[in-house]
Length: 193
Image (spheres, rainbow, N blue to C red):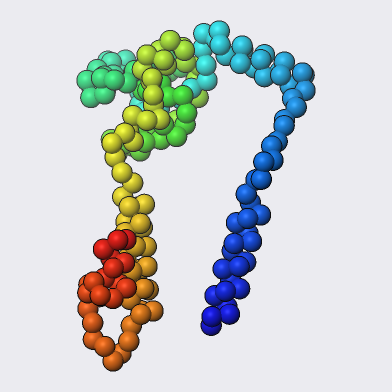
């Protein structure tokens, strides 16, 4: 058993040493043509008036009054979101939101589908000024100050399983010591883990 542990630790050490860079560096040489293409691409969007974005179409009706009433209800329910309407003969369409990325629109889409089951995402040209004023930091807004419950639960589970493995390795059937006893490894592991 001692030989297996020694060989496996030697192998792991060898793997770790093979990944350490010993004064080595990597130089990347970029072709001038690639630099020019990247510059053109960034300049194309730097001065753009409109950009591809996402909205959620949640309602269609042939009656203009119903459309206007629904629009007012949605504007009062979601004051931070822009509600727009369009007309394509014979229907009025209501759309909400200005999202730069599809994943940021999906959360609201799921919420809207509770009240409007026919809601779906649409791709549109959205004014850059509106997008900037409404969504300064759309990726961070929902996640600030919150923790991922699944990851935290997995972390606690792994700690518990590791602690139980330390207890199982050190368990001696003759001695009936508590897992919380500080004179045994599991108690010390629990204290410092």
